[in-house]
Image (cartoon, rainbow, N blue to C red):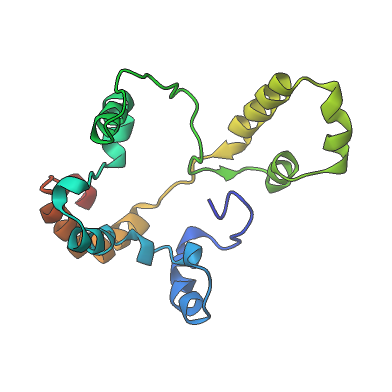
Length: 175
């Protein structure tokens, strides 16, 4: 997100390496990339404060595998109508980076030229054009096998703790 939105100029690997210094320099928590990945440590605070039945934990894997089932379970948990079927075709906040940062900045930032032509093009058409251009411009960044192995080493202990806390098999996270 930081890279996509033009706030991060380092590669992911470089940003991970810079994290300790950034924390020491009191950078905002958004730049605490590795620290925010220790899910068991974060969830423990909630488990210490609330009864287990008051909490519901969902994994992104489950959300992508069966979005509607997860949403209906959330609705039931919140005691709201679970027969509602939301439109889940549009994806928001995807982990993608722009091929052209300049084009991305033009699309997302306020520009005088854009403001002049906005009244001439219907809102729905503008959104569709913007969405089409964004989809073509944003690409999923690759994660090297070496970086993945290093991250698994860093998070292994926390993943095992999380697996125990959630009573779910997360062994596929360690592969």
